Amino acid sequence: MSDTDKNISGYGSGNVDAVISVDEVTRQAAAIAEDISIEQLDALTGNDPHVSINNLRAGYGQMEILHDIDLRVGRRQSLCLIGPNGAGKSTVLHAVFGFNNIFSGSITIHGADVTALSPNEKLSQAGIAYILQDKSIFPGMTVEENLWMGGFLKDQPVQAKQAAESIFDKYPRLAARRKHLAKVLSGGERRLLEISRALVMNPEVLLVDEPSIGLEPRFIDMVFEILHDLQHAEGKTIIMVEQNAKKGLEFADIGYVMVSGEIAIAGTGDELLANPKVGELFLGG
Image (cartoon, rainbow, N blue to C red; front, side, top):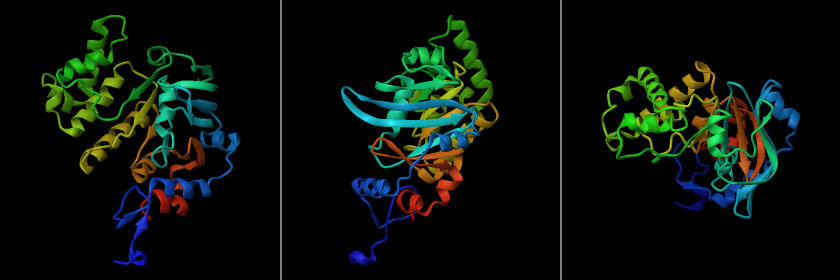
C-alpha cells in the first residue's frame, strides 16, 4: 500500500490503517486552537458555574504542566476533557483533588476556595471524590470490605457500613458478590465497585479518570449508564477525562480540547462532535 492510499486519522473510534503520532496530533490541535473567553466558559454553564478553575498553573515537582487554564462546569452538569496524550487532562483532575503542586490560581466549589485543601479535606469538606483509573480496588478484600474502605473518613465505622448497604440496595450486581474477593470480579464489575466506593462519602462532584479504559464495549455502555444516572437522577457534577473522545463527548454536556497544558477549544459536547477539525483529530475521521 502506498502512502497516498493509507487512511490516516486521529484516535477515538473507527478503523484506521495508520494513526497520526501524538506529536503530530498535538501540532495540528494547537493550530486549530481558539481564543476562549471566560464569558464563553460561563455561558456553557448557563452563567451559573459550580466548579471554577481560575488561571491555574500546576504540575509535579517544579515542572509546570498546566498553564493558566480556566474551567467552568455547572451544578449537575458533566464536562469531558479530551486531547492527545500528555496534554494535561489527568493533571487537571489531580489539581482539583490535591494530588499535585499548584503554583498559582484558584479552584472554587460554589464560590468557596478549595485550592489549598488536602485530598482528605476535598472529600470530607468540599464533597469532591476522585474515581481513579483501573486497578484501584483492593483485590484481597471482599466487595463489602472495599466499600467500607470508601467510608474511611466517616466518624464511625457503622456509618460506612450503612452507606455501603445503600450502595448494595442501588446495585444488586454488587450485592450478589458482596462476600466475593474483589480480584474475581469482571472488568465491568471492578469499575462499578470503584465508582461505588467513591459514592460512600456521598460527594457532590465526581472526578472520573478514563472510565472506559480496558473495558469491553458492553461494560463501557454500562459504566456510562451509571454515570448518566448519577448526574441526572442524583444530581452529581462530573468532570471526566476520556480517551474515547466520541463516547465522552456523546455523554457530556460540555467538552474541552486540551493541548500542551492549555484549553484549545471549548463548547457543548454536541458542538465538539460536529466540529470537523475535532472529528479529524480525535473522532476517527
